[in-house]
Length: 69
Image (cartoon, rainbow, N blue to C red; front, top):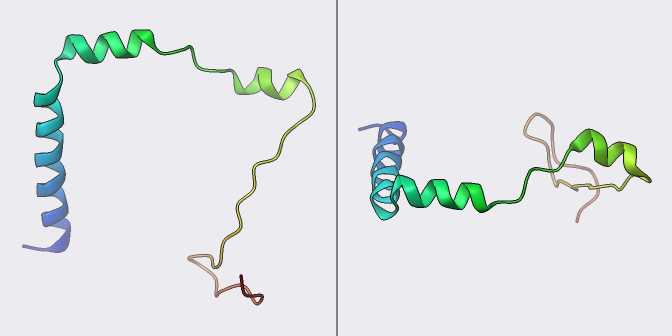
């Protein structure tokens, strides 16, 4: 069995266990209880922009950054 086949088998078992743990009615009730999603466009129009940044040590397609972290 290949690594990919083992991952798929594990994920199928995991999905079946999660499905057995909660009924569809419980899942539907949780979904209905959630807040409405926020509008990305409205957030951009509302005022000053915020910034979310990520610093990576290396890019998968590039070599590591020259400065060490």
